[in-house]
Length: 139
Image 1 (spheres, helix red, strand yellow):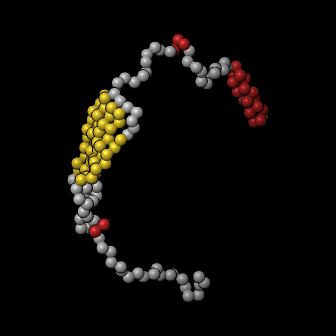
Image 2 (image 1 turned 45 degrees about the vertical axis):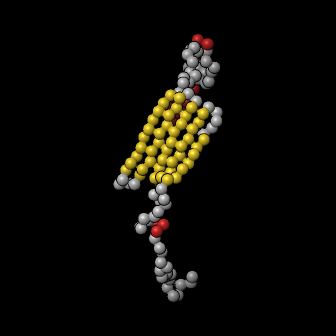
């Protein structure tokens, strides 16, 4: 009885699926009516921004400044390194010239006491890990 019901439901499902109109939902080239005549070409680029982080509690000090007009972009960014120096990168891009950067360091590298680089590590004694075997167990 169950087999007859399953077969009947299967035939009904096939008939219902076959009776629907099938619509192609794949990719088609856009029709001429749907094309707009707006230009999506980029307009002249012009911007200027500047931001900085100066947080003494986390010792994060860095920033970035950039300005652009048309194909001419110039800017700089800086970061205070862990050794106390300031690294500044000044850059420009002029048309198709590519990214041209000038990297400079200011200040003297120094390591405060307590920093990783200033610690002197003493050779301590080393004790091999204990083995938890019975004397009768083979290793």
